[in-house]
Image: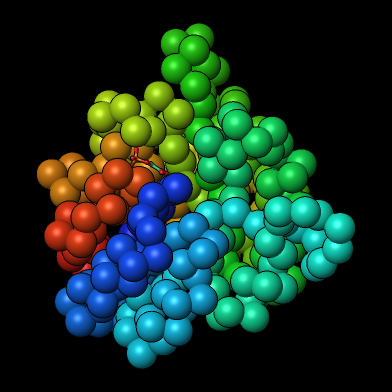
Length: 251
Ligand code: PEP
């Protein structure tokens, strides 16, 4: 049985006090550990406080990006060692906004994924096609290539611990959710790719989230699909009430 994982992605939102208030509001209300994995992925400035404040509650704190090197002359970057020092447990890697605006490639995604494992951080590796690719029937091939290149060189055991987030770009922040069938079709394909590239055991263990305008009204149906094990959520994760509803649906 794969444990559902609901991860909020605040993107570049919330001042420090707002982030702190959010965590204080939800921390007593999130379902107990074991039923669902709850992750809040916040901008770097929030991480020291959130990590400390979430310690005794079943909420994991994640980053939205990191550099792959341990330290060095990379002005403006944050290293995996810095995140693990703060007990950050998850990191989003290769979000489509980072691929689009910050030149992230499958190669940097792969470097960062390896670096996350070296530091005991669970990578949430994002893949997904553009509208043009979907209309040209290129979705499956494109997503397959992102998965294979992004996870290249990982061991079978590491692949079991990866979280993959299938996020069609045309559905992110647009209010257009992929239908549950459309989302599941690609997630099923991703699982087959993992089986072909790594093993059946890895394919059965790896968790695949859907992301793209997920809301409390759509989460239950998405989670009922055979190959969707959770959600990566932007907009609807910003308000305490809707985030809690999403997490409850996974519990
Ligand atoms: C995301 O940030 O990964 C995302 C899917 O955003 P939204 O839920 O707002 O579409």
